[in-house]
Length: 345
View 1 (cartoon, one colour):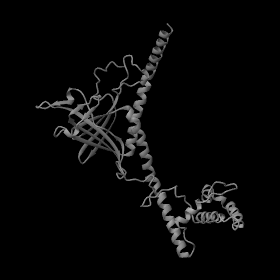
View 2 (view 1 turned 90 degrees about the horizontal axis):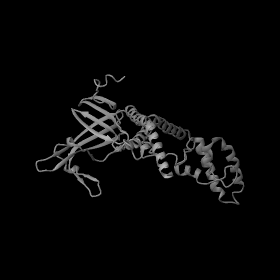
View 3 (view 1 turned 90 degrees about the vertical axis):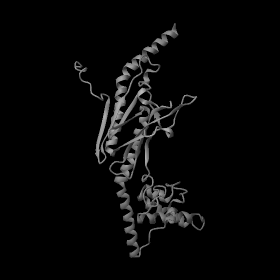
View 4 (view 1 turned 120 degrees about the horizontal axis):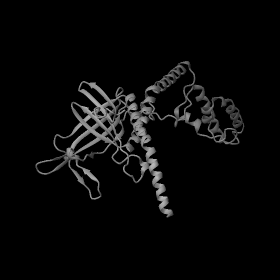
């Protein structure tokens, strides 16, 4: 089957996806290679599957300028989860906002109609809160407020009215009953007018929108730090002997105000000095980068494109694990048995 493999050598054999877009600034290409490797030979922990060098290799090419960055498989999990969460948030904003707006318009129409017909107006917000201010001390709904009872089931109104009569009969003897009666009246009036809403159910912003799901703030799905690459091709030495290393950074953000392409991948590249700390960490001095070496490329995606990219990257990770796991598990069992035999002897 592989007789012709020596003649067939594609340029990017480990590429799992690419996305090409034509814009006024030219062609932009986004590609991901799955540079996964397993632990070999004889790893200490065979079931870890991937070695420490395994990465998603991400490349963005614009105007013949190619910037390549790495994303570790363990970092991908959080990226995938955040992507799904902002997709859910965007879906709710786009497709359910119309229902929220319709509800506000409907309430405004009812208020205007009642105003001109002479009917009682909608209870004030402070009065509406009274429906949830007192809990019933006895009976079937003990521990619940009249507002909670009616929100659970509007058909309970008749039972509440019967309880109200009992409270009224003993109002002179038990003055606190008057507060509960007020809660009954407020809850039933609000229910009849369609305005019975618990304040904690919807937190409204100053513009009347649902602040729980509505936001114009950008969300970083992945906010990377500067990292450096090793190797001769990733190092420059100036005439005065200062060493500069190729450094890169990856950022991925969601912008709610960009309807068509809300997802932006930003890759940056520069040559900067790298100072090694005593504890082994590296301090990348981006502020001292070589003049003219900083380059930044951006690639934009629709939500549909981005969710498909996340799914493709996830499948690559799972399929690699499925391929390697049988042999690694067999090795783990063999090592475990060898250790047991040594202990017995």
